[in-house]
Length: 398
Image 1 (cartoon, rainbow, N blue to C red):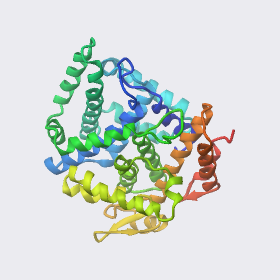
Image 2: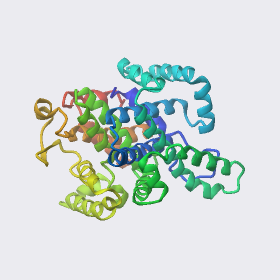
Image 3: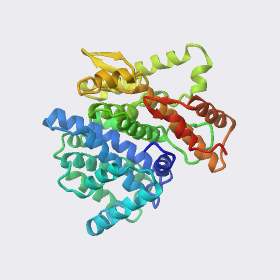
Image 4: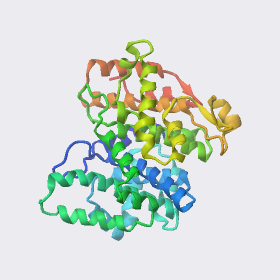
């Protein structure tokens, strides 16, 4: 699944503008919305486990998010009221068209993945709790966007109706523990506000680029690529979930420091380590207090030394290798993370960002240098059995 056709399809979500019939600021693309939704669903699921003792299938939750992302990427930005009416009346036919489009546009898409997607979208009894959490996260992400847009559109015809519809949909999810907490505008609400700011932090901010991608959109792409790499590695469910969540949260500290580009980090000896220490301090001071104490360990696990291979052994974080993880720790309980694979996904995402822009005719000297450097770094390179060199070869030099 880690192919040029699939990766290019994922990036199409960065072109899909949301609320395009409204006055709105930048940062409202489908890619950003889906990324915000997946971070929100993490909050919802953790609260549901803690407060209601729910049994969440985290792999199914993540896969459901990916399926819904691909579906919306095909159908583009249809107004929610229209989309839900279409799905109510012609859901099966629309989904059949989505499957056909995915097979056409991603020729190497795996059939077992498509079968699982079809089961998720069409079987009402499949993963009901996970679907409910994703629906709630969808409406919460939409509400977050609309609360900003509403101030630009207050008094314009239809705005009050849209506001009422969103609030009505959220009422249907008040039985979820976190939805109640978020309605009270407590700590969890502030965390969702904070991560939402990553929508407005542009990647390669010093260069014009098409499509523009934010830090928030970038982390979702890394997480999705990390998911497919973990599946390719034959990872257990816990390891697949860990790789996805680490990819999703790996740039969380940048909401406090902004995106500091690699050349700046490498410009002075020791600067990269200093930046890491600053990030760790700011995460402890600004982010962790917004989350329950029992979550702090996981957030730190996903954001510190995020690109090292590691496991948890007797309560301690221990570095390992992919080969050792495969042989000894590829079972539940060790919380294995394939950091070096996620680093490769992170670099691949950066490479594709500049490669796509160049294809649109927009580039700059340092973007060209970055593209060449990353391509050279992964020439003929295989990591954990995943041939990243082959992936780069699919992207032409012209």
